[in-house]
Figure 1 (tube, rainbow, N blue to C red):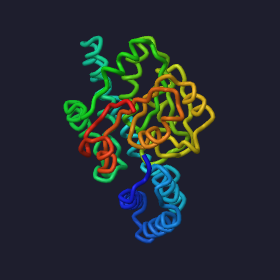
Figure 2 (figure 1 turned 45 degrees about the vertical axis):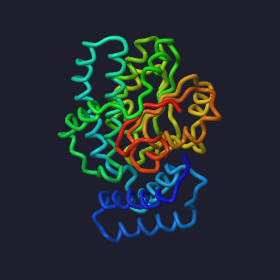
Figure 3 (figure 1 turned 30 degrees about the vertical axis):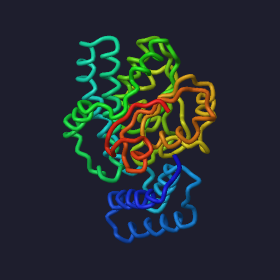
Figure 4 (figure 1 turned 180 degrees about the vertical axis):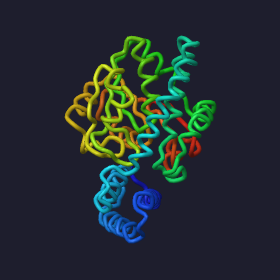
Length: 296
C-alpha cells in the first residue's frame, strides 16, 4: 500500500508526540518538528509506502535529540511484563488442542499487535499494569477478517514459515504462537530489526524474550526501519523472502510492504495486525482499530 495524503498528518503527529516524550525541551521538540517538516516537504509523495516516511522522521528524531534508543525504559518494561503474562496464556493453551489451540494462540499473538505504544491514539505512556485487561479485550474481540483456518491448513501440512515480527512486548506472544507452529513440524525463521526504531523489536529484544531458542533460525531483517524495508532488507531477509513458501507478517507497517510487493514473491503471505488508520481500513473493507488475519 502506497502513501496517501492523509498519511502526512499521521507521520507528523507521530514523530512530534515522540519528541515530546524524548525531550522536555520545547526548543529540541521544535528542531525535530522543523527538520521533519523540511524532509517531508522535499520527499512526501505517493511513490513510497508510509513506513518509509515514519522511519525517516524517527531517524531525524534520534539524530536531533542525540538519543539512540528512544523509549528504552518502556521497551524493556513491555518485554518483561509480556513475558510474565505469556506464562498464563501458555497454561490456558495447554487445555486445548488442534485448531482451537492454534486459533487461541493466533488471537493472542494478534492481540499483542495492539501494544504499539508508538501509534497516534494509543500514546507513549502505555501502563504495563493494564496490559492483561487490554490484551484480553483484543483476544475476546476476534478478527474482523479471519483466514486463520486456511493458515492452519498450511501449518498442518508442515509448510516452512518465515515469521516477520513487529513490536516489543508483542514478540513474547509471538513466541507462543511460533512454538505452536513448530509443534506441527514446521521449521520457522524469525526476522527482527537490526536497530531500534519506535517500538519495533530488535535482535536484542528477540534474545531477551527467548526467540533465539524458540526458532530454527533468527535473522536480522535490516537496519532501524519501521517494519521491513524492501530497499534496506538485509541479504539474509531477501534470500529468505525469495525462497519462502509461507510468510507470516505482523503489524501494519509490514502489511504496507507486502501488499505492495507480493507479486515479486512466490510465497503465500499471511498478515496479522490491528488496523491503525482509516486509509488501511478502507482498503481492507473494515473499520479502524479492528484486527485482521488475512492472506494477501
